Image (cartoon, rainbow, N blue to C red):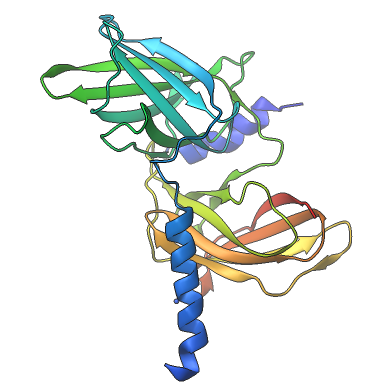
Length: 288
């Protein structure tokens, strides 16, 4: 059962205040860069199946919005597909759309890390990403909404509030941790979503907690990766630290040698030294 008091207590302090000898290395770095470029979410690609997770209208009724996703929302990295229509039902295809996620907790409120959409809709959708850092709790009146700020040329700016429901993920994919003198962070495991046996790329996003802002951390750090299979009592070799590849995205490799439940342990490094005061542990279920 979700212990909302425990979650709230843990989160409130976080939200308030790599030519011969090096040919192999060069190729490896090129492979990582190629993977990062290919696997960065392509905003021109729209999944075949989407479900509506929220809708809303502006106060003046001049703009309506629907928010869709590939599945029900969980407290993790979520890709959102936004449809906008004017008061005559005509789709908005070009606009500056800004996502402002907000969790209301009684007298308090906080936001979440966000990756903003481009200004041109693709196949009718503006695509953005939000990392929800905690789930909705109806009984505690802790509720999420996505505020959409929309600016169109020749049209007055508008705002649409879209309430959304966020479930607790079965396995945590966004975890807060203390970086010592470096401050506080959220680390999100974002890919692959379905993990199979073998040596594979793994991707994270790193965000710093700065009062009620969550800026992406583009470089200056590495994420040391170790793997452990608790049921079998062993780990695996061949893991490679995750390094920065673009704004807030870090890519590394993990070697998961057999199916079953694994733990991926992540530690934040700066100049080769560990700065996180505790390891971040992601449970992953590996398929054949």
